[in-house]
Amino acid sequence: MPSKQELPIIHRPTVAIGLEGSANKLGVGIIRHFPRPSSKSDPRPPAQILANIRHTYITPPGEGFLPRDTAKHHRSFVVKLVKDALKTSGLTPNDIDCVCFTQGPGMGAPLQSVAIAARTISMMWDKPLVGVNHCIGHIEMGREITGANNPVVLYVSGGNTQVIAYSHRRYRIFGETLDIAVGNCLDRFARTLQIPNDPSPGFNIELLAKKGKHYVELPYTVKGMDVSMSGILAFIDGLANDIANGKLRYAEDGEIITNEDLCFSLQETIFAMLVEITERAMAHVGSQQVLIVGGVGCNERLQEMMGIMARDRGGAVYATDERFCIDNGIMIAHAGLLAYETGFRTSLQDSVCTQRFRTDEVFIAWRDD
Amino acid sequence: MILQFQSDISSIHIMSKHDHHLKLTIPFSTSRQAQIAYNVISPDPQLKPDQFTQVLSVSDARGASDELSAGRILVAEFDAASERVLRVGVNGFLDSLGVVVGCLRDLDYDAL
Image (tube, rainbow over all chains, first blue to last red; front, side, top):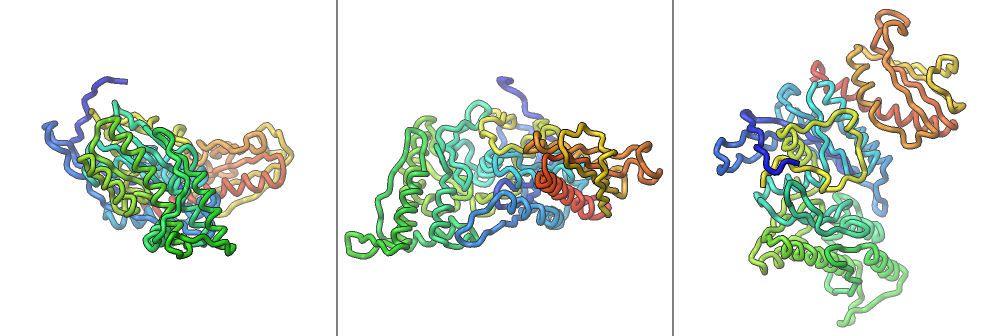
């Protein structure tokens, strides 16, 4: 590993198309990067988003999405989405420099179905293929959109829960879930409550939580730098089943505990845990910035709680809107193009997807800090 | 595009570990397309390699029934431990092939 390398100077704009399909969201994005200024102290111009299209596989209330059906959804829509993205961007295949795709982590069959499309496009258009780590996509898009240069990153989604900080060409995992992701906990509780998955189960839990009035004490499971969520889910599933079976609980003011109260209590508990481990990482690395990425990052209550903590420390919280925090293709195009510009390529043999792909496995060649 | 199904045991070139075989010959318009399909589908390993084997090849001039089909036929030979495993594996191959064909049809240079 080189200790210091000169970043290659790109003298012309570069364009990438990115395909994402690690979970139930299929995304295609097209992004343009502008050349770095000749003076190193000048900031690079912002990236230009030429297309960001997404189609989500939504299951009926009470059901989660299974790999086989999700892959079938992606296969059905990928060609149309690529076509629409090209049309929106006004570009032709000739204008594209590389084809980026999510190589992992995620669900096997959905990942593979999108990889097939990416490989085909790469071969048809005769453009290099770039495999991208899904987590790195979230992080780099968050940095690009918010301008947060070197924040502690809280990456929270249905499949991942990690606290990440950058050091020496790697995004290092400081803390993570010991069992299930925060989003998975929320999604599964949504199934218990049989609330709709449209537009997303987490969004509907957030709506219910806003109507909650009573805090119900739940297990609080922070373990050092890590968190555990499965016990909380089991406990709150029990409470919800009690309500459904007529075994009611009452708050101090005599009102019955409702599902809204449970949603509220679940959010307060798990978000407080996330704030704690994020703060611990901030203290460890001496950072004032927090960047929240991933689908759960859309949650306004999480942003609010994180903001209170960050401001108490004299810092700030950064978050993106649903175009970027929910899985999308543009983040894959962006992170892939950053790698491509350093000379990174993925051969066909190396383009096999992998369900487990640690964030720190990726060498961040495009940063020199 | 026509798929030809042949259960022709005598033409299986791979080492047949199992009793259930299928050979598909998929003609493409050009050899470039057949080669793309081959390159795109080949890298992925099988989930249960001890029960299911898939061997892809692109027909060469010698193996083709006529000069026109030389190099533009994707040949897929399957070997499976049971009928169910054969069906599941072949369906998986056809799913991937469907994506390739869709891309070739709608996203190739001459289609856009």
